[in-house]
Length: 102
Image 1: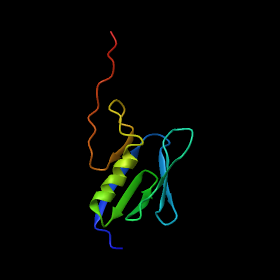
Image 2 (image 1 turned 90 degrees about the vertical axis):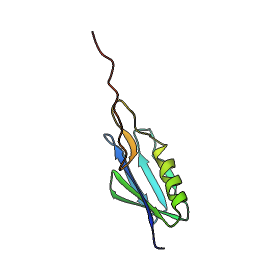
Image 3 (image 1 turned 90 degrees about the horizontal axis):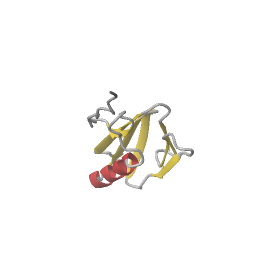
Image 4 (image 1 turned 180 degrees about the vertical axis):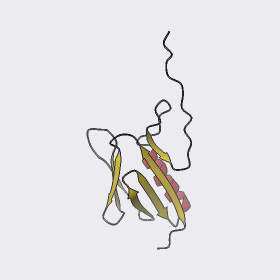
C-alpha cells in the first residue's frame, strides 16, 4: 500500500500519550481519563506513532484518513484556556485570557 495522504496529530498535555499495536491497526490513547481510549483503525488507514505525542495517519483515500484523524481529535479537542488536547500539527489554537481578579 503506497500512502499518498498524511495527517499528523500532536498531543499536548502532561501525561497524555499514544501508542499503536498490531502493525498500525489499533491505537491506544492515554488522555487523563480513568481508562485508555482504544481505536480500531479502518482498513484503508495506517497509524504510526513517531513519539508518544505525535500520531501520523496515512492512507490512499484522503477522505478516510481525514475522517479518522477527526475522530481521534474529537476524543480530546484542544481547549482554549490552556491549549491541552489533541490538535493537528499545523493547527493554531488562539488562547483566551482567563478570569481577571480585581
